[in-house]
Length: 230
Image 1 (cartoon, rainbow, N blue to C red):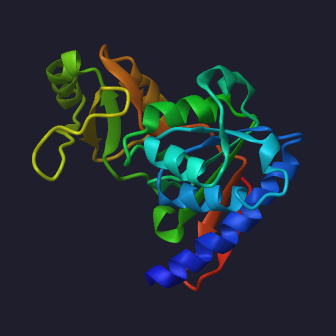
Image 2 (image 1 turned 30 degrees about the horizontal axis):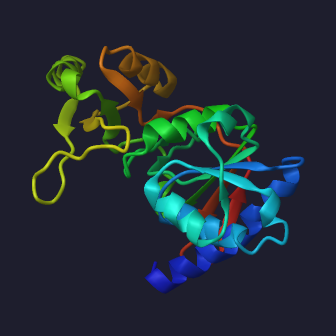
Image 3 (image 1 turned 90 degrees about the horizontal axis):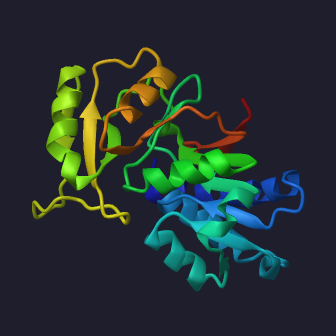
């Protein structure tokens, strides 16, 4: 898929996805995940005639800046329990619609919004849709627990790697934590593995997402998209 074809697909699906606002009666608080796919959604929100009555909750500085540039009002975290709809992307989506997220490091905030929202819309290109999850699972860890969590993950037959930047510095989330990417040979039960990893002391959040979204948008190789409602 060329970059121009991909851009065309995301522009089309973003326009359709905004239509999901009508399915969420009186949508006024909108959660925004992170990444380039969500940026397309933000740009479409900017064209809404009634955008002055909408407030958004971004999960990353990248999307917050995009929202501010688009003239959208930013809501604070006190509005999270009232989130009407969330638009987000994914690193992988399996045949059961479970996901791996956290490639950008915003998994903790993204999971809070996804579990708080009345309606969830996921947008991703076709390469992200797989039969079984097989990417390393991002795990947000308190710096104090880094060694302990890595050791515990190794005992669980995972291959943990501390995420670092290009120059070798540890990647630090906007929450001030570290990310350990844990590779597993096979995840038989996503829900069980999510809970198992969350039970490790020092783990703040896990990039396994077992909540099934209401709608999935798949950007296709020909510049079109498919709308999937599980």
